[in-house]
Length: 269
Image (tube, rainbow, N blue to C red; front, side):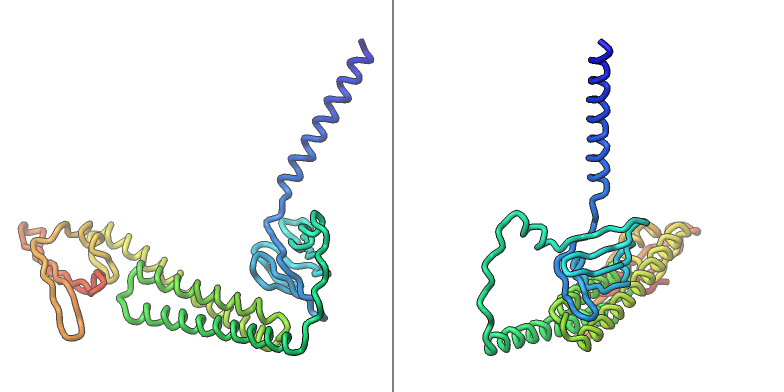
C-alpha cells in the first residue's frame, strides 16, 4: 500500500507541474510579431508593421538587440526574443530553391517600381493631410468635425508607414519620412486635445442650460427643447437654418438659434 501511494503522489506532482508549465507558457505569449529584418551597420526590423532600430520604443517595450533572424525586447521587466515570422514557418516546410540571380535590368526595374510606389504613398500623405486641414478650416468646429480630421490624419500616417517600409536602404529618405510621421502624430495629439476640450465644454453648458458654439441640433434641443418654428436660409455662398422659440413664460424668453450648413450651432439670441 505505501508503495502504491508513493507512485500515486509522484504521478499527481508530475501532472501538476506540467499544468503549471503550460499555463506559464500561454501567459507569456508575446504581443509582438517580427515580419522582417534589414541587416547592416544599423540593422532595422519591422515589428507589428512599424520600422524600428536598436534603442527605439514600441508601445511599452524597448528594442534591445536586432540579430540576423531575431529581435530582443525588454517588455514588462522581462527580456523577450522574437524570431522573424518567416523563420518560424521555414521549420515546417523544406527551404525553397534559391531563385536565379536578377539581371541588372531586373534590378533597375524593381528599384524604379519601388520608387514609384513610394512617391504614390507620399502623394497620398499630402492629399490626406490637406483634406484634414481643409476639413478643419472649412466646416464649423464640432466634435464630429474633429473626428473626421483625425480620420484623414490616420490615413496619412498609414501611407507614410507604407513609404517607410519601402525605403529601408535609403537613410536620407527614411529620416525624412520618419519626421513626417512624427509631425502627423503631433497634429493628431493636438486635434484630440481640442476635441476633448470642446466635448467637456458642451457637457458643462448643457448642465447649465446655456448654448455654446459647436453644439449639435440634439444638444440645443436638450437645452431649449423643440423649436416653435424652423426656417431654411440660403444665399449665394451659404446655407443655414434658423430655429425660433416663442416666448411662453416670463422665465422662458424668446430665442432665435442659427445653425451652419452642417447642422452645428453658430449663434443665437
